[in-house]
Length: 449
Ligand SMILES: [Zn+2]
Ligand SMILES: [Zn+2]
Image (cartoon, helix red, strand yellow):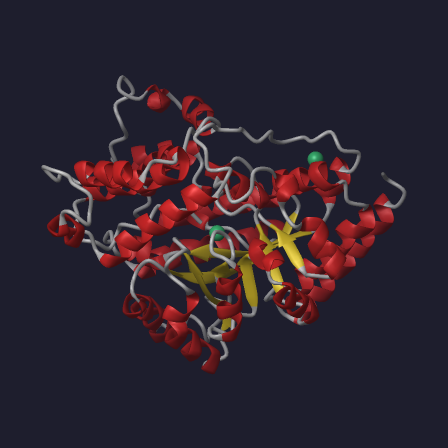
């Protein structure tokens, strides 16, 4: 998950938040020095003069502690990560040339790591903007907004994360009504169904909407309606996971949690569990220990993004302090041998997002992901799309990218699919039905590749 919301909660104007956010993203991708980066952050925020933060405590104090944490953690990452250069390497998409493509397309899939707000396609964006009278940028200033295809084309060529965020903010502004959220989720389900998804567990960020004046109930009404349609129309079952934005306070997370609790949304199955997303480094899981403890006490499922950019200690703390039953991303697991073996032994599901990891420079290329290691060690994992409309691929694209990089066998894919089902939060009868679909798939494709 990106940094797109990192600045929502602070007392800056929307424009300043956007500008600051972009400046923070620059740190990743342009390897700016701390001074240059902070300078651009302050200037964009409208500060009239700049010296380094240590020389100018007034300006330094003007930035909230958590924003400064984002900046400094981004800085350390920008200097440590050899792939965090500005040059964009575009990930090839769609039809791979592997012999297993047809089988991979047909493989009954579960998706566990999908931010519904990250699936807003350009065509829906234009439709909702017109419907809601939300002004889009003047196409004479940004030709990407000339047409849907121009915007689609533009998304293929993000030059940096801040470039991505610019479009992401514009996208989010068009989501206002329950109908908008229904359209958003329904469009995702249609696409997921065409990629062979049978069961999806999707994240949503209530704080991202309530903080811009869209009520929680509106979001839920729309998402729930889409879920119902997807199940009726294509037999695609789904669950919702309420994510807390980790750059916001624990108190604010608790407000979101309590609103869902008060409406009975956990107990009546409207929401299956809780998650934790947004900026990882500097916001360790234990900040949210109380809300996670309350959820555990109430029998609510728990997951968290951990070990995407953060080191393996984030994973260990998510498991030991927040008692999560899953780990989202979790690629840094390879840095802690003991933890890796424990996750394998306990069959904790790790939800990987290959194309996202490449786009956000967590790895240089898909082949650098620990897919082979996880298979060898028996770590249970699933392959997912994260923010597909922006990061260059839906779930099948991610499967294909893994196949191109690792050349897995049909039996290995069968094992991955079965693990994904076992690690899902659907009931036992649904798991059984899905497992038998995978069994049929394996028989049908036996001998291919
Ligand atoms: Zn994510
Ligand atoms: Zn393929």
